[in-house]
Image: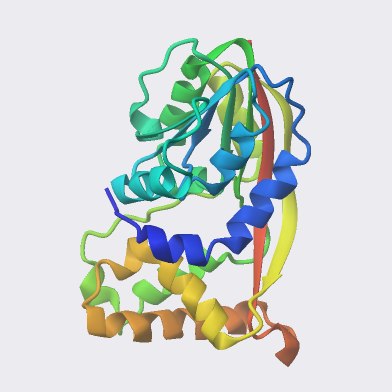
Length: 262
């Protein structure tokens, strides 16, 4: 299991926070729900949701022990009674009929075993419970992750990635809807959003990459990681930038999904 740098992620996760906040603006809560936040990362969003659950509770889970330690420490001591964090992988959840709502924001694309993830989300929900998900989807434009894959397969870098497995999965709306239905869900919404984020400077984009390219950079010698990131961002600029003003722009697709357990 890859351990992300929780502090670096926290500093460079404004984009992820903005996407989660956008999705949460659509969320109606009575305040009594029991909620599960999958891939909670630094816990910032999880803690914000807990304030909307005065008579409910939320559990934030993440497979990274460092992230969970950071989340618990950063959310106040002691934690509010309706807020908890735990180390857990969506592929190995053991919850049964426990939650009214499952949330996940920009985490599930890091789970290639999406059938297992959806099955475990389904089982964690009470009958009639819902899931609100947002993560990277597949569209016509090449993704940043695909450019990273192109880079690591190039002659300069491939020797470092022997037996390396692609660490992400991207779905079209049609493919994900079909996958969710196979696991028993009723699909209320599944559509693709085209988004962009301007990092303003090379340093800004590089800092984001250092925090989020961990699945690839952990394989490299430390003195090669900066050059690898620079190579990726150069290649990515050739793919997406249509003018000099877009040199530091990140263009990406988001899959917005709302499911209901039958």
